[in-house]
Picture 1: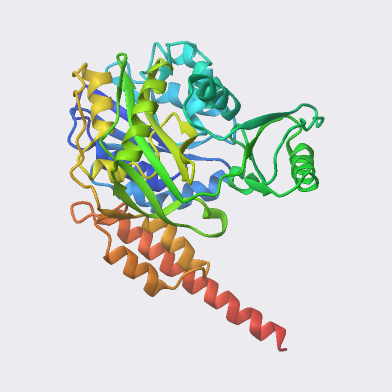
Picture 2: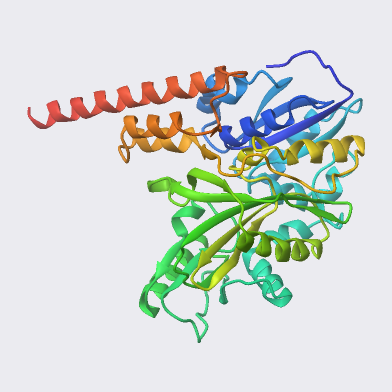
Length: 415
């Protein structure tokens, strides 16, 4: 898809996820630049390129062009693709919306900086990717004094590792960097034997990997805090997003239903967080996960890109993607404060709910009830209706196909 150029500047949004691409395109809509989407795919290129014709974000009314990039999990493929897309007549901002493209861009910062604008730490190649490592984050956070769970590092090299002494149980194990199936490798370990088994399985699979082992927290509330950092200034809204209901199966831990909230405790934590982010010298948008327990609110991790649920903040009156693009492309000054007008609003990710319906975790009726009673929708939009129509059609077709396969299996069993 390609429409006539309308502006002298453009924004390229990169992601593997249509939900992220669509939310970013709608947030950027109305700016003085063209919006182009780049869907990143990893495998089965011929099949995926055919399917790309029906990708929902492709139908978004706000975009000027749509591209599909086969990465095959290799950074060079993305970099080569971006060089083919380079347009010397239009200054272009890159906005990666997931953790695959983000470190690849940073690791090739010196190759790309004369062609594109994009996020960085101090404008130095490799520093952003280093900061994405959860081991590095935890050391910085604890040294700064921001509340966080105590942790231990485990480093696997050539399949070999040592589990440090002093780990308390239960504990929580997670990869410190992005790996395929990262969500599947988040594990609670109740004793040393369980931890050794989990680490051994990862060492057999990945050979070289950094792991973080944290004290287990009895979570009462989960928060996502969206913000932006540029020109020595860190911007945070006067509230954040609270986890209400998550997905199931492979979507466990991903927010399906949430609420825009603000209270003295979370605002006090956000004040500390703002001071911490100022020390990072980071230019770009970010998303911080925080956990509340009986001991208060603690830092979990920082993602150096706009989170998938960030569109709820946009729809609540604080549009960080627009602020960021206007600042980077046009040098527009940043606001002094960011006031939300949506405190108390409920939001839903229809994608997560419909995937749960298809896999029989929840009923279609329950999902429909949650969608109809939400104030903010990530996919449904009266002004931009076609993407949601495609999503709904896809899930209905998928459900019918699964039912047909189930009936066929029953017949074969009873032959």
